[in-house]
Length: 313
Length: 325
Image (cartoon, rainbow over all chains, first blue to last red; front, side, top):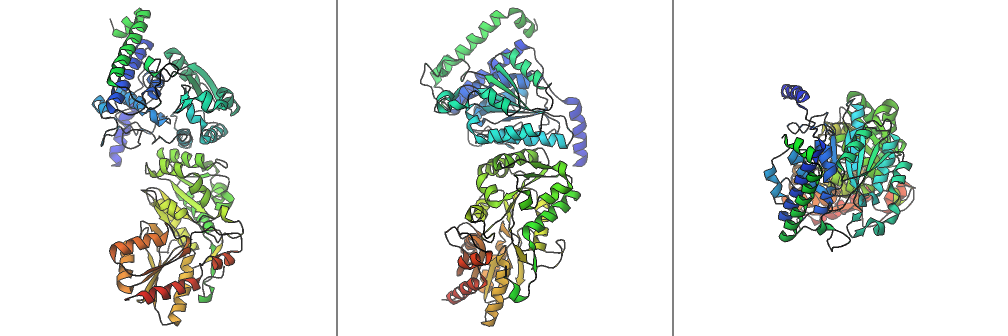
């Protein structure tokens, strides 16, 4: 057993994967993963497509933009960077990213939420490679990430820990307990990403808990390094992740302004009656996929040279 | 407390002290052990570990939810974390964090709850854990330990770290009589295996924690009345030593349980379920009956809430009289 482990370690050192795709390819990946989110949640008939879509550009950059160090063939590699999806209802977003990264076959995606599938309704640690924590009870992932970050320091390892939380999730007191403790321990290997999609289960954040704002000032007051970006702008996301690495002696938060549903009209919270945690009908899904395709085609038209390069033409 | 002195037991340290000393000892043997505190280390006695290994001690402030989830992350990253607080704050305040971050993913986190039961005395019910055994045994994957005295708490602390997986260990505030010889290494302590402290065939007393000394005293009194009681220290509530319970039921025909905990969901409930499943015989229960206690001296409280050797004797006579009816 030990011998095997030693061998594995050696192999891993030389096989670490940190895919670093150019921006136009990241656009293409985000488009495909968005399609997969719609397809899998529509088939499942339950789940949280809009909460996954708001996060998908960030997840794309994290997994395929050269940010996260990981090896899908060795998911327990001790030096891997950790990503914890604390807003566990965005599980479909995490699953499509993990499948794209090669943690498991995409054939599993249609089994989302089915009896016996490792793709459970919320992420379950130990069931599926690449899932670093069982989440779904909001507020806990940042503390768990802090535990990983402290362990890295004790073990003199240089891995980084990324935790994605929701804006509604920040209603939880534990988020602020973790914020305090992480700043106290100056864990600069911990980066929080706030998917600020402005809506929680029963209404907009501005109504449910208006005093959550100004949220950037709160994190600043807790002595975190704060970055604020458009969470659908690939270059801004890349830039923010790269800049967090240069922060020393402080945990960092990227407040990513996003749209719950990634601008698809069916999810428009002002103009439609779409609810949090509700999947699309077959017809709605068809329209949403067409709209996604249009969005991507428009991007490709506007960035022709990039697209050609991306195709390797 | 006076329990056990009538039968010549000498007073030892509190179980929280024994735990704290054992933890420090284990800390030097196992560099992977880390401690997470919620600003009560001088009460739980993790302060001994802090003095010896400050780099492996994380002070999270008065924030139990974060404290427990941080331990979850430390365990997921391969460390061997121990979290200690007052039992009531640890289990009640961070219940969901224990459920999601430790029990469900079956992570190797050790939880120690001090100030359990009503024998903490004057601090009043807000500080008294009388539901903790029920709360902890409820979790799938959990092991629940309630040691009786100083030497067995040292042994329990060691056994807890030898065990891979989540454990809840219950300690107490007051000094308790010494039941076992040795300093911890010579004490029999196998998780899931009850220690038989006294043989007898008329009935069996199954106790845990401070009630073990009370059970021994009760057994002596019962002998005066011509009843030979078998006495078990059931230091592991989960997994329960079902074989010992079944054998006791079959061989002695009546059982009394004794615990410093609510009767709901504690040792008695676990034993009763086992008895009903394996070998139905009369069972009587000594424990706290559906109420919170109040401030007072430990002696006053144990008396007022029915946790004395005399209460065990009374229940034993009742159980005995129900035999073969």
